[in-house]
Image (cartoon, rainbow, N blue to C red; front, side, top):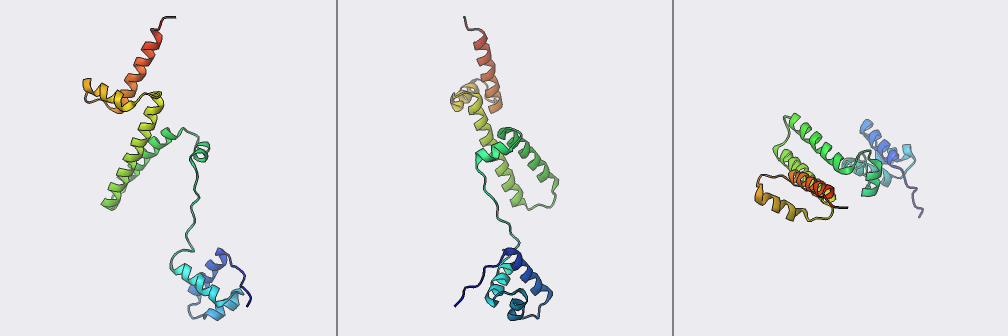
Length: 164
């Protein structure tokens, strides 16, 4: 028994389109038209029915490839994209409430992760949770951004006052 030659996704799409255009055509007729087996025709039609012929596979990219492809630093891009996403979300009036709340949660989580990474970068290895906790004992309304600003101001002030 000879094994049938593998057919491409394009041929499978063509088979599905042909069947839609010629609904009375039999599997054998379609197979003969495309010079494939009737089992390959059936497989192509099954894939089409499941919607798998129109899907494109997503390509995964690691963080280094992503950063090298970006023109802006990743934290800045995350911040800009979160603002853009929230603006788009508020512009869509008829969005499902569950989808809206999930999107808001995801954006908030991404911004929080981004902020914590940015804090670690700006605080040069200082445990930012301890620093922010200490600052908030004296200024309870202080945001994470305020903590970074205060730290940077104090670091600069201390570095200028060091004796040489």
